[in-house]
Length: 134
Image 1 (cartoon, rainbow, N blue to C red):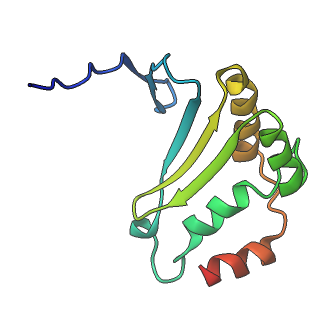
Image 2: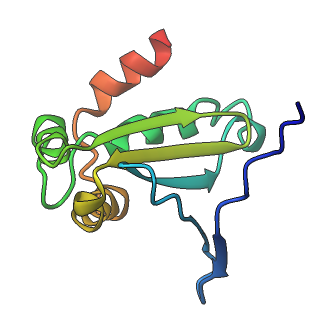
């Protein structure tokens, strides 16, 4: 018996006027949406004096924003809509991943955009200790 590869899902790649690349992969048979923002940052771009900065900023994004004053409020807003946020700092990229039910996607994108564009930088000392431990 010969197995064939599954068909590739329809994919659209668009570059926005600000240079941001948007990749949309449609998989309507799944009951979850995922949005991933990748930032060109990480240890490759840091020197001795800035080592760990990308990882620190990754943590700070989820500490509160203009509409969600602390980490608890931000996470509650996301989780109450069935979503989850995950982040990871690598050598060349920082990834912010959000998964949610399809009907919550636009609301959760607004929440994530607020967190990324208007962070409050709350609890810097707490996050600094956490990042140093990691």
